[in-house]
Amino acid sequence: MSVISVNNSNFDSVKNSEKTVLLDFYADWCGPCRMVSPIVDEIASENPQYLVGKINVDDEPELAQAFGVATIPMLVVMKNGKIVNQSAGARPKPQILAMLEE
Image (cartoon, rainbow, N blue to C red; front, side, top):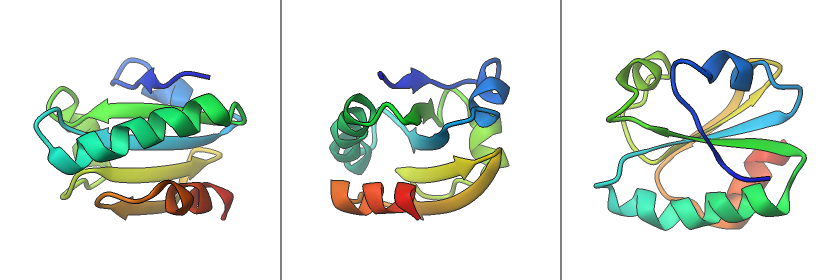
């Protein structure tokens, strides 16, 4: 499965997915975000059981504010529409996968 670009208009369908959701809040100018991005892409392609989305904080400030994003990259894991895990800053792939499996 590929990564979905998440915005205000499709967020509700993403949030209400039956799958566990991984959201990557990022900005194009953010160095650590560029390090995490290919890892998130890999997780999306290798794990079809997850719905993976990316949210550009510059394009979607309302969503970033709703999630209280103060530091990017920020990864958020949601199950049944609720946040179950989140972390700020770059993380290696095993840590991101562990967040999804908790």
